[in-house]
Image (cartoon, rainbow, N blue to C red):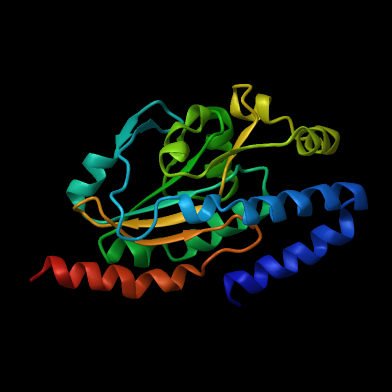
Length: 220
């Protein structure tokens, strides 16, 4: 089953189990984000990728420069481990992580969660790659992916039990749009998939020919 089929099934279950007023506010937020044009203004293929130095849950610094010195980098921006769509996406990517590594790619996930929450996400989803802590969404902002929740959406999420200030360890009430980037060793974005609708993601198998192409170019 392709990832999007699994996400669609998850969305159907989510719809059945979510109170109608909460579902309505979340869908309106998706529609507003799609129509805002933020995804079109974000970093895309052909752009220079912003550099970063972030810590993993154990406090180790991981820099984009160090990763790119080894080869291409796959970056998975996600909303948080509390998001079932993001967790499913991470787990599916984990199932092909060894194939992605064999094509020369380093893999990192990035979210605005605290180190504690990021470690929990790694463990709960069995990740072999690190979930880096982007406190306040500074790297997400550099990629054009950070956005601020409306007061109505904020109130709705608090009602549903999600306190982003607690989960992220800071009070901005901003979120990172899910996105997946393949960065070439020269720092140029080779591929970008940006999801203003967080229930839609690319299938990780689409990355195989992209990474194979980068590897072939590096060998010539």
